[in-house]
Amino acid sequence: MTKNSSRFIEPENSLYKLPFGLSESYELRQGNCTFHTHSIEYKNEFAFDFVMDVGTPIHAARTGKVAAIEDSFFDGNNKERDFNYIAVAHEDGSFAFYMHITNIGATVELGEEVKQGDVIAYSGDTGMESIPHLHFHVIELDDSCVKNNVVGNCSTIPISFKNASPNDKILVQGVIYTAM
Image (tube, rainbow, N blue to C red; front, side):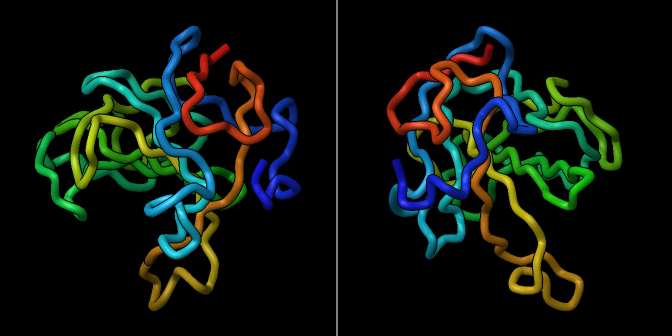
């Protein structure tokens, strides 16, 4: 367990489901509080990277409204800042980010309401990465990441998934998780 385990809620009380289809299984390649891009210095300490083939359906982890879409970059571009993503705003002010989606991979439109479990995009291989995967994280906006009404690099927040099997409070890197 990580030193932040007290910050995570019990899975049965979570508002989030894994961002992939029921009965589907994917390996958590990089988990919370690990190294490099999932560290405090990158403000991504509570992010998840699930290994997925390009074209895998991505599901909304929580109900919300599509707040941002970028899906103009091409798979295999291997450029640090040129990645596709969808951001979904939740009623409590938090935002979920689904990153590295494929070119023209969004199945939703800006401002559209999505329900938990809806397919919102297809996974891809955009941006700086070594293998195709879905990078998923949740942020809460605060003064440290919003300047002059522009959202910058906001810190991620710890979340658990209510439908993960095994039902770990904190997902473990290298484990294959199934959406139940």
